[in-house]
Amino acid sequence: MINPATLKAKFVELFDTQPLLVRSPGRINLIGEHTDYNDGYVMPAAIDRQIIVAMDFAADDHSTLYSVKHNEFFSFHTADPGRVTSPLWANYLLGVVRKFLDLGKAVKPFNCVIDGDVPTGAGLSSSAALECSFAFALNHQQRFNISKKDLTLIAQWSEHHYAGVKCGIMDQFASVMGEKGKAFVLDCRSLEHRYFPVDLTQVTIVLCDSMVKHTLASTEYNTRRAECEEGVRILKQHYPNVIALRDITSEMLEKHRSEFSDKVYNRCLYVVEENQRVLDASRDLAEGNLAAFGKKMFLTHEGLSKMYEVSCEELDFLVDEAKKISGVVGARMMGGGFGGCTINFVARDEVKVFIDAMQKSWQAKYGDPMNIYVVSLADGTSVISG
Ligand code: GLA
Image 1 (cartoon, rainbow, N blue to C red):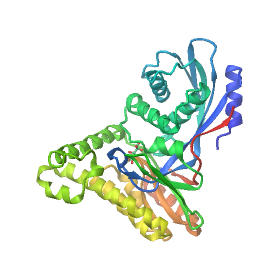
Image 2: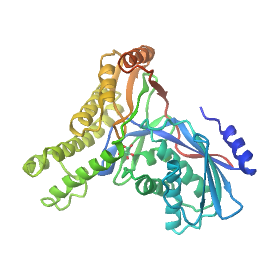
Image 3: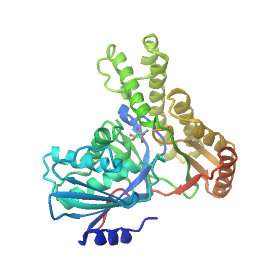
Image 4: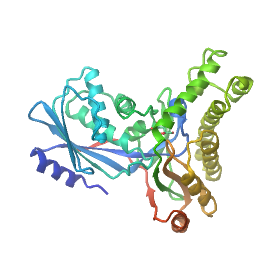
């Protein structure tokens, strides 16, 4: 657990002024994967792991960033926040500053210290938490009056242009807008969202961290997005109102099947089915039908693995093993894929059995112990003090 007082003390030690402290959490996604950049539906929640930013104005033209985790400083001229080849973590923040400047905001030089306990590369959106905590802090401190919604878009812009991943809006939106004890269904086109409580008295949300992040993750992610756009291009010729895969049905796909490569067809069909699953799953949860919800999690995994092809051996193994354990309501890979975590809904009384069994089978196959996180649902970005 990260301690805000320790971070504050570090800031005072380094810069000798009293900082503003802002936190922003990582996220999980219950269902609705790779649907956000297709204008579809997702069902995320913020979790009890976060990035904290300490910030105050600086005395000269330069802004200085310090990452506790990397024990590394980075200084830049505030009016010229170009993308850098090293350190890579600075890019997430530099992109945010660039976008503020592009929006006509006169960013004054600042000092900033960052730490957090969102595991990186685990598919829990540590990068969104970093961008959002920083964007929120800058906005608050320099009184730019940018809305929370626009801050999520600024954070996403940074991810696209400075980190090079053409992500959807889910991660940043969940990090900023999460509510304690709740998940929400987000319409990624209108950004309308509806919160609902997740009753963790019956099930516990357990994440199994494959601890791999295959190097093709970000290139393959961008390729999936391009494949979806290809599907839209094909169908738009017949249905001019189609803007994104959100607008297509399986009937439309079937009718024009011959115009699609197998690959693009599979990608599109997965997205159409997954969007429908999110809507159906939200009804399952409203009716308290966890069994039906869990089945959909398994179906999502199947689709991500076979049709969308963003899983990997380790993730498939974790889901297959989870399936064998009684007490598991549902399991699937979560996030962009090619590594990171699986999300498991486990009957509360069976959590210990689940963790022991998963740990055992993982170690038997891969040797090293795996990280397992039990998470609860937390509030989105907020000011801690200052
Ligand atoms: C990553 C992206 C999100 C989303 C997921 C897949 O987390 O950042 O925008 O596309 O992958 O659902």
